[in-house]
Length: 219
Image (cartoon, rainbow, N blue to C red; front, side):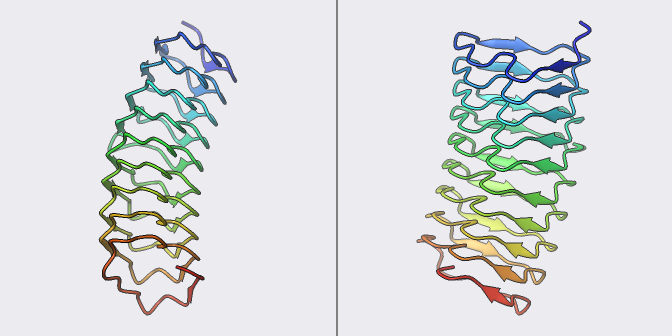
């Protein structure tokens, strides 16, 4: 009680820590706060937390589920990187989330589905790279860009609808999505980066809208 911040590296490499209940009143989880806690299987984030720091839960390979409070506005880069047992990420419908950092969920190989809330405007570099069990993702209308390698090597992803408003699909955004068979690209897209859809072996048909003015090498 009275704690408002979990400081940087506060529980770094606590390799036997299995569960933690963060008290009400905490507003931020510091950078690398729980990094290298491979046995951490359960954590409760209270309403009022607004930010999850860079690499805060990096490598918490026993963590199976996380519920983000409605109050969270930003998820730092590598925040849940290589949380390989994470199957469920619950983001409230009325979430205030606006920013998901690069590599935030990369290597979360057990996640099957995720809905990104309204308010998020960009999918950063490698945000969901190597989420190899991801079969479904819903992107909100407010997204304007999909970053480099954002969904690269999401080998279970079969279809994705890119919302109207996205203007750029960056390099290697969907490279190595072996089972992707269907993708809808809206008229708002003007550029498709190099290798954007390389190694999408199951993609049989794709319609490039007239709005696209540049397509990179090996796209």
